[in-house]
View (cartoon, rainbow, N blue to C red):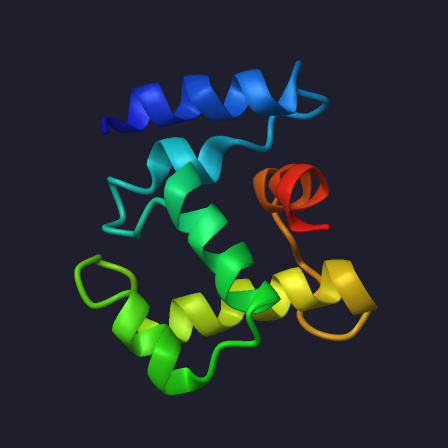
Length: 103
């Protein structure tokens, strides 16, 4: 899926922007950063809910371009949303999807 389509889909989920802070996603391609799709985010939520082990996570992302360290960080963001423990710098997309599908 193209980055422009991703931005539009995520914009529809999040609603009107409160800040100008979606630039990371638009500029991700320029700095060769991985752009998380909605499916990737939902996979992270599912792995968190299943309390997946590192080996299970690694197996789940085998056919993706996601690095294990990135998925572990995303899961730690989700854990923070759920418990208040973990990495607290959570994207609006992750917050919205977790509120909708994670509980």
